[in-house]
Length: 231
Length: 103
Image (cartoon, rainbow over all chains, first blue to last red; front, side, top):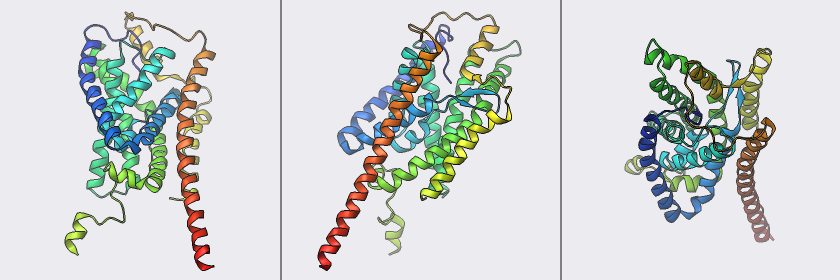
């Protein structure tokens, strides 16, 4: 999903910066609020950042005969919210742009938009929806992480197709970039989903109280509103 | 989920990523990001800005990617170990309390 340095001409790179930065600013606000109100959530924030660090550093082989990397942002979006996740993503993207020549400073806005905003919002929405229709938590986390990952790459394909339409137009270009990114990404997204399920299960077991404070989980011991009404 | 479930899931992940290597031994496995870069360059586009610093060799690039993974892995390992250790210690404490009460 990294759009390489210099690959978005004027005015596109400015547009993506303008769209992404207010959201990142909201994330910084959320971050300072959460760390002030719930200081014990700090290790959890570090853990979510670490999960993104590991997953986005792994270039994994896929069935298309090329490699790509997962994003790791879906789990963070569920646990600490999409706002904070955008801040964690920008840290990773700056690291990779400056030290690895992977992605870029001029394309940072576009890359934050796909990896740090669209992916996490999609993941969060899928998690909320799966809770509403009563899917088991593991299934919800799997879908959120896997589809959040895929949505990031679909977004990158849209971003590139907007700037570089083929002679047959935007949609043709979208299919072209979509084939490069999205299909390669499918097995990776499944893998990311499974890893997110494992880590979330651990968190639910060992940090259930904290996840309840962050409103990710309801504690099994605490009666829900409905049960209270019944009794 | 217990340790057995974790093991099954981790094996599934390993199989998922080992399978392409076995199924497509002739494939290049180059990066999708650079394939997209290539597709754009083929349209005649020249990037207007180049990275401020590029790793001097692919070895150095690999080194820095490994550093990135290591930073993340250390934090995850520390967190998981710390929480498990705390829980185990709590368990032994309450056990000794029970024993003390019985005695």
